[in-house]
Length: 129
Image (cartoon, rainbow, N blue to C red; front, side, top):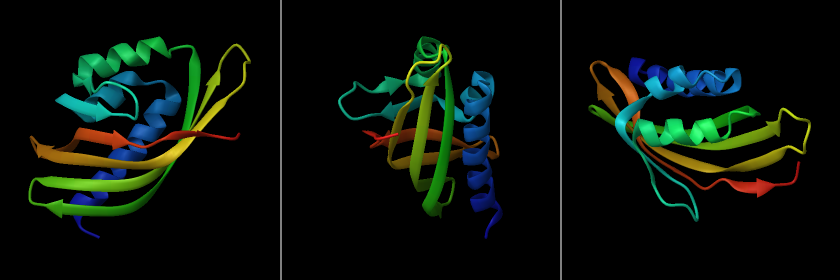
């Protein structure tokens, strides 16, 4: 496995750990300033600021996610990663958890010597818990 592939795998692991810990600063550091997230039925979420605003809206939940990387391809300073993601969102007030799962395709770019997510398209759909 190449050092770049290892770095991308570590980025994904760091994202999952930081999301679970509620560490939005770490999550934000893993994306480009002009990142774009695409989700079914939703308008594009643009930029770190857009992501940060969306995170504030879910500050009263716990997030637990797991990822199964299917493919990583590196093309110079660009790469893509396809993975299967499962996310469980649990309200801290004890309400019912919501589980979503599906495929995610992320486009990454090496900026200032480190990989960051620049585009992310996910096909997560609600599943039975």
